[in-house]
Length: 142
Image 1 (cartoon, rainbow, N blue to C red):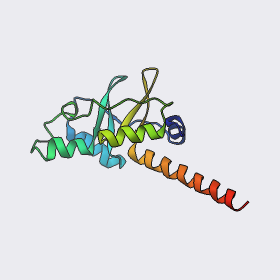
Image 2 (spheres, rainbow, N blue to C red; image 1 turned 90 degrees about the vertical axis):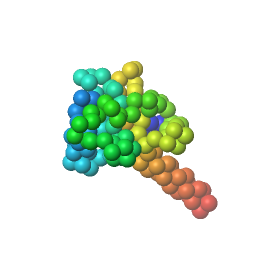
Image 3 (cartoon, rainbow, N blue to C red; image 1 turned 120 degrees about the vertical axis):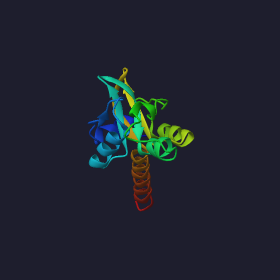
C-alpha cells in the first residue's frame, strides 16, 4: 500500500498561505493567480485551517455575503482530519469520501508537512492500478 510520504516526496510542498484576517477576495485572487483551489491559513508558524473555492461558494456566494468584507477566518475549514506521512493513500481516500472533502493537512510531529488533495489520491490510485496491470500482464506472458 502506498503511503502519503511517497506522494509528498513527488510533489514539492511550498504552501501557498493566507492569514486569517485577510478579506476573502484577496484569498480568491491568490488562488486565481496561482491556479489552485485552496490556501493554507496560517498565523505566523501556526496552522489554522484551509480555505477553498468550495468554502467561498458555499459560505459567501450562496449566502449573499460580501467577499470584500468577510475575512478568511469566517469561512475557512478547521475541522479537517489530520493525517501523517505514514498513513496510506487508501486511508486518505476513505476519509475524503466519507467526509466529502478535497484537501487534508499532513502533519509530522505536530508540524504541517504537506497537503494531500483528492487529485493526488486519484492519481496515486491510478498509478497503483497501472502497476498491478503491468505485473499481471508480465506474469501472464512469462
